[in-house]
Image (cartoon, rainbow, N blue to C red):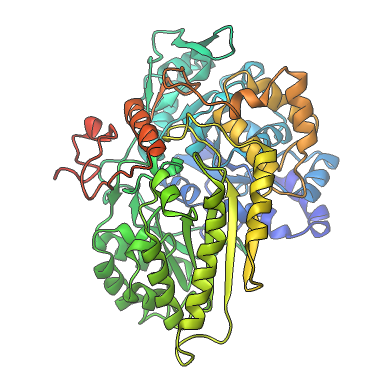
Length: 619
């Protein structure tokens, strides 16, 4: 520690935002090394500013540190200016709490939130002074663990990790570390530990599975090669969302971060079933906290951290069964304490004047909505169960309340998309703009801006669109130009997502274990920090794919048959294959599916939980 500390003192003033790299923030946990038996480095493979905003890290950091003889520390991907100085001064990647090198920890855990952060994992392991390939890390420790949404298909990273955790981490993390603490005094080999770990529900050890391929390149089979490995690994879910651990305090950063506020999770899962949305399926079943729990956590976090804004976190906050009662209860506290209450993830079809009144203190000028498609037909294809009437009535309400900015999110390249759907985006934006001018002058704001933002559709595992091809780069460019030419007013501002990052995202999201070599090659060529435009090197990725005989079109530009063995077929996220096929067929008929509150759609989660978790049956 002292050696690293001394070196840091000499270089920190030479980098941007040195506060990212020193630790010591209010709320950070420092323990006596001599009284610690298990050390865990929680690594977020992106910068401090991004990672410190991540709720999952806050939860698992507090959870592990509740155990007196365990110590969880935070680790982030350094910006390139600091990384260069670290290498020049022989400073290995370290934990912020102790400044100790993480190569000496028992566990190094990465949360995998986004495919374009994959090579940051390799870069961080290398910066720690460790081999990036799991096969070259011979000792018991450090054990490299992966979790997060991307673990629903971790195969493109299988060569680099010792194990993955599927699903929600609160319970399984404790079970895994308890197992290690129990076995550690007996000096097991890594394989001996991993064999025992594989018995824990939700733990996937990739080296314990053999993958065979057909002559056409598709997966033939994925089978266990040790008796401890299950034929299918099932994700973990938290049954009682009111009793699960939630921190009463957060680490408060010295410098500004992306989301610098308290965050309270109000529900998990989603009832909606939008067919493109991976989160909406892999986080099922739907569960919500009761109002008393939410209010208690809100008060505790605000009092302990000093934050003057609290955000209610979920995939769709307004789907909470008692949302209006919840807001009234929270406002009794937040209004008295002058705390802003932020409500992200609001649904158009559940918007009302009471919600507008609540969010006005935080977002006085603009509102953000996600129609996703420009026509009702295509919204039916993707099961986005909102109508144009609901979109327009909500925007009309917003303008009458004095809002002057509306941001609209859409996707290009969705299944069954036609040119009229793209033109429909421009037409819908124009209708919203016209609503502003139809609003009486005494009610509306002084100026108006309609922001239209588009992203490229990426077919993801465990969605009804996992079988679909991604549109080619030329197709997307044509669609983008069509949309651009269809917008006539300067009051409608258009921004479109960079296409090549969506191509790479799709390859990594849908790929199999053979991609590991290409990931490694791209990293050796200097590809990392790929989610940042200034660092993204698509040409080098293409070189890496070519050198390893990887045809990216095979992974992203072909439709997959319903009976094809997917690279993730041995992983069980409880949503059944039969349901995904059924939903895919309904999409091509532009038929919608009701949401979970209206009735069970038979996704498969109910079969696992008896309907208790997803709200179709009372406990």
